[in-house]
Image (cartoon, rainbow, N blue to C red; front, side, top):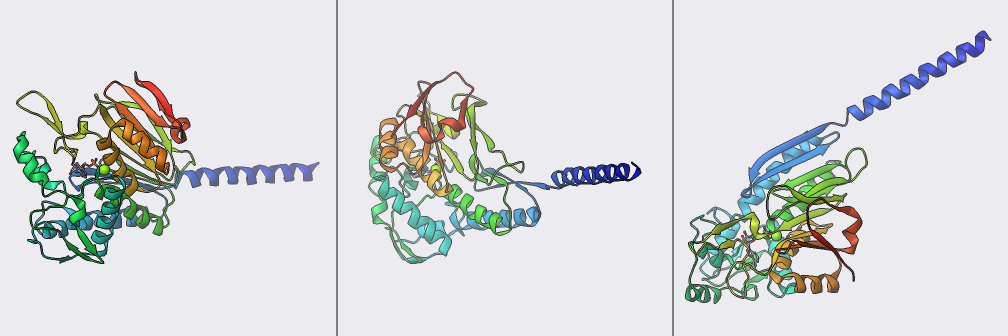
Length: 342
Ligand code: AMP
Ligand code: MG
């Protein structure tokens, strides 16, 4: 009798110890958050587990280095050097050459909806200088003569563009940066993290408790969200003219995503496009180019490629989402939901 009492007491101690240990384990999943401003936007990275602090410091340094390479306005950047090369070949870093190579491939694949040489047109609308104005048709037509990704030559690390041409990798750079940061964090052994580059989201693994990350899908017509997307190990990127626009003297809204066919800001009935895929660079290029294409062409593109999911929000408050994301999206706003099937 005495012996069995001792066994029970011992079991209790062991149980208590295990419970205490696992409680301690949950508590010690360290959360480190780093917020900073770079690439013209607020950046926030949250990582969990050992090594997070060192990994986040390395991540921030990397963003600042990439920004130095790709800024269109910083006179020491590689993009600036290409833009002011007067038609001469410029040797660039591996990062710039691989970003440009990807952008040119996607420009081709999207038949020029993504146009990495749109910069002079963007400048005419005042988007980088914030001196917004509405250019006239003649000016736009003149500028469009020097727009065309087909005239960019990239051979290894050498880039050459015509003297009048200028590059802008603003539609691709943040997504690509997300991929590079994901590599840095994973190499440091991080298995749970969320990278937010001004709304370009990259989720590494799941939340520390094993559940999906819950991301709000921004309402393009106002503050707040239209719903929640649940993902793990995915990038989620949204494009829309609501993100940056100005109101002209004519009272109309002009947004920062330009239709390269006309030189005018996109105005095709789409309010936003969200792309969900493994790679941030893919999401970033596609969200911009599908926004340029408009709903019908975007649906065609998805049906032909299907290596990503997308959520389109129209000006008529309809939401089209591809079947792969349907069970991962919950609607909270007053919208009409339609599922796209292959
Ligand atoms: P995103 O926010 O990724 O959709 O990218 C929009 C940014 O890409 C703009 O602020 C411009 O710098 C640039 N941009 C605008 N229109 C285009 C276009 N048709 N193709 C490529 N880049 C564009
Ligand atoms: Mg983009």
